[in-house]
Image (cartoon, rainbow, N blue to C red; front, top):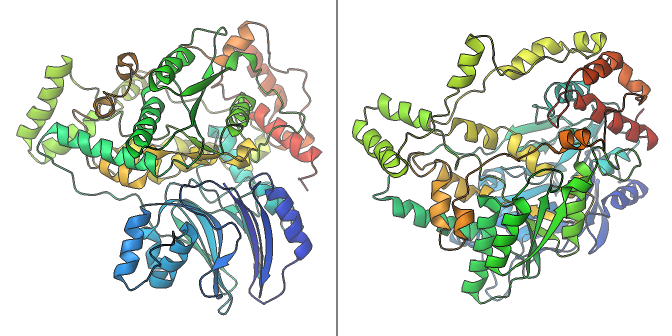
Length: 615
């Protein structure tokens, strides 16, 4: 993902060129293919270019059609041909022999429709538009949140970037922590407020939102949401399968670069299906495909078949594969020597493993596919669909769909209505997590953390009639948080991660499909790729990792909680360290232990203080 940062001044003050140069230095890791710094009336921009494709890119930004409105950002569009046709229908003329860049399409759509045109933009993007004459700034982030965007206001100036380091090198921006962000992290691993960052003065533009900076005030509004549309009732199951495969093939094809490409591939169904469709797409087009798979295997730490199954798939598809041994990585390895990019608190003790995998993939390609998005809708919830049909008295449909599932599987589909958890709570053995007892009392009181804890435990609002949980993850933040964790901001290497299963056209189709029988346990995906994968992979059931890496490392004596570790002084206001150590000594620790959050936070704060990034 290319790097970008900008400064705009509503009072027309010239940008600080030296500051732009420092910001560009912080962006260099993102864009090895060129650096560009430019100033415009009342604004300054820096851009580091990463050449990706398949569509042509503008290598030098900001760019403009008319010399008035300038675009700065990182853009990869889906549905380019459809967008171009819409523009032509509204009077835009294109040179038929010249392939237009994604940036030009965005500028043309803006010139034609303004803010109303943003929902027409499909794909992965985060960009800013600066009007030099009216001195107005607009910033937008795509609906899935595949590209990060941060901003901070200081008087009449607004600073923005897709990289936190570039923001923090500005002396006008406070480095004070956002304690509400930290509170959420200590309670649940991540912050539920999509506008917050770990720093009080730096905000995050939520996915699917537009920022406007006109009269000295920042206005943020949502410009699009994942739509809830009418059910798609097709005549037979095969029609669903055919449309599913067509849309997924399209999503994969539009994300394949002209050169080498990597894929993070486990032995599961999602990522292997994408690899198979990539090979199939290249074969149909008669184009060479240099695809290499990257897999993590934890043997001999514990029994793990991911590497073996991924290798079987790679051999079947005729692609290269590199299997990395996860058992060689120790919890919190490289966290204390400024060697690991962790821009915000992160409770992933094996972060160095995932960074190493991205570093390995970067040697082959600067584009990597991933299988994110397959576990939501395609896993299926039968209960919401059952209640939907009963309320509408569609008993014939209910009998047919659930009867087909019974006839094929010999059982009812899993309802996944939350009944087991509810029953456990009624009998006193509920699965609700325990409130942390190691929080510092002053911090706990000032932020009213017990009340916040209860708020976080409440079930989310059920909006979609068939896929309430999957829709919530897509539309309310968790998915964008996961995608952001794959950004070079977190890996430190110029590898752009792409998720075909989160293509909006594909997602919209899935949300309209009846959950039973095809969207239970990924039945639809199994049928769609049945002729492309080994039967062992196609029939494999979804299951969790067969062991816990952290617990295994503890049991083998390779790691133990650092009881003698002295945390940074700033931790004393957040966590009662003595109570935390007592809790760590009491029971068995695993990768999911809440007691790891303060330790992760302490290491992160220690790194910030070492870099002098805290006030």
